[in-house]
Image (cartoon, rainbow, N blue to C red):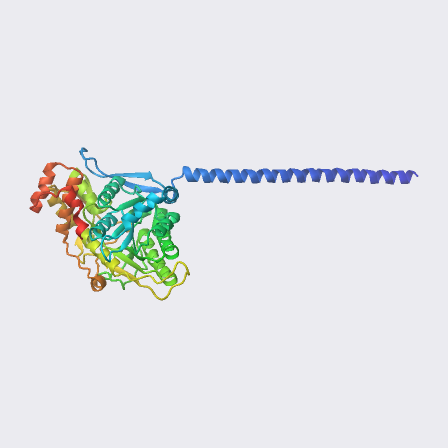
Length: 482
């Protein structure tokens, strides 16, 4: 009996010990489960907080931009100021535009703008219409009786006031420019539902070679994603599909050393991210042409200049620095194939007129046969040393530049550009006719008037050209007859 009692005691003790261990394990399991649940909640909240902070406080990958602010007329400097600023995100501006635009009145307005006013006229959606080339092309198309509807997001890469000024010029001629973005797929679908565009002139893009080193994501968002957005909508939501002409760039030639640059030359060695995005655009164009039967023409522009130009371009920024007495930096031995805006406009219009039809169907998703896929150089065919361009500006402005010559840095620039335009000449009669001297005269006339510069400078320009400075109205309408 004592032995049995002792054995039972040992068993009870083991049971008690086991129960305690089990209870401890259960309690521990509950604690771990509770802790895991709390940790999961904390992780979700932390993730949401990071997303919120990224969206509203981080310098957005899509919105960080460079602004070149115009000089005030009363400023003694008159020179450009560089700013880093954040403007509307491409995607954010798209979302707001899609929700704002619509309704019977809106559709009536855009249809009126896009309706041709001549027999056989075309109806063109122009993206980047408040930009330099876009505004001039829109004026030229409207002047010959074509229908034009513009779209621009008015970002602050350079002073938006200049873009608004171009918008007013277009508005005066009955062209509507919507404040919206090419990444807004819903808005693009609305536009193609409301208007049977025959053509799209896609000029919206993030420009500039050097700025790509500071804000690379903006180039991908605009030049790659934006291009896909336009192609997608045209291929899948337009009935009938329009023919598309879009702006590639001479920058795609990159490190090519053969001259003059021909469309047959290598373009697989881009010297900048900007050039890489444009080269990517040409590859994307090939795929949409092959799969969906879109008629697509790419235009490789060579250093376009003229009235209402871009302030970040060398000729424009040099003019402002000369007037202000600020130093300018020149790259030794740099040469450019400067192409006047009116010549480029003629090339764009010629490309539109000869684009050929798309062969796909948005309804069936199939194409009836091959569609045109083309690429052309639009240049002046005469490379000029940048130092000569500065000398012409000095003469026209009546003032010497404070020059600083340095060797070319590794920032994406190339030593020279030189266009072979024989294909464009053969296919749509492209023949540039404006010399650099004549083109810069037109630019300086506009520049002096637009910025209301000192009359002594205006007289200096007039004396150098032998002509009176053009009025703002005349300069603004310069390419309307192109």
